[in-house]
Figure 1 (cartoon, rainbow, N blue to C red):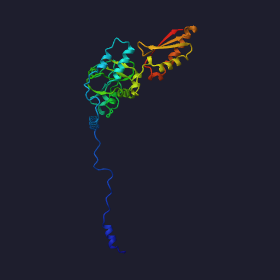
Figure 2 (figure 1 turned 180 degrees about the horizontal axis):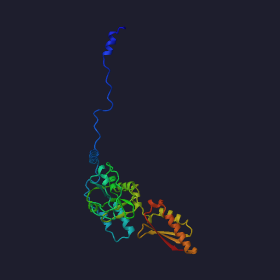
Figure 3 (figure 1 turned 45 degrees about the horizontal axis):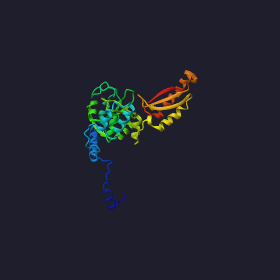
Figure 4 (figure 1 turned 135 degrees about the vertical axis):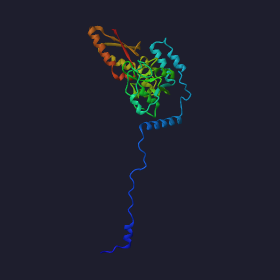
Length: 300
């Protein structure tokens, strides 16, 4: 039998090192969704408290400029909207945020129709699907309360005061925001629309105005926007039978387009020309520039 050296015996006597543990054996189990939401909400509150507060002294009341613009009911529709918009973008707006916007509770949240104010519970109102809560942005959270307008579009509710918001729903909390931020959220999460003071005024504001504000641009209504009118005129004058185009503010629409049509082709010819003009104006490309259009044919 072969002898084993003492050094070999000593080597064999040393036990092999235990394998290193895989992962952290002390890792905590996954948090309950409600606990995780509470932690996220606390972190959000800490960030908000640490950040500068541009509306720290805001008491939630309507500004004198906006009140004055809203009370100018003797103005024509286009002048009224023009002055009201200038007052709104010069101050701050209030958006609603669910008081308990936790992920586990979103499934049952309701959106209230701007045209059917049925109280704080939203019973009987048209509904829109709930959106995901964005814990880092209170204004984005307002999109979860988007409302259905009577024409089927979805709009972001914005308010002139906390009192106006409470007339709509008492189970939400007011958050003051800059008009541009509210416009950006409306463009990202709704049909690029605002409805002002749903539940009391229910005033739909022009889509091109919201789009322009979201991009940091001034809104120029189409009834006094010469570049837009020039493009509309150029396209309409390509329609057979159209001999002239003029513009003005509408009564129920933003823009009234007067179209002079050659009557030499009879009623059928006039009808074809008018149909061609309507085809031009329903082009979705006008959506960011013209809110609504009223065509007014005139005999040549």
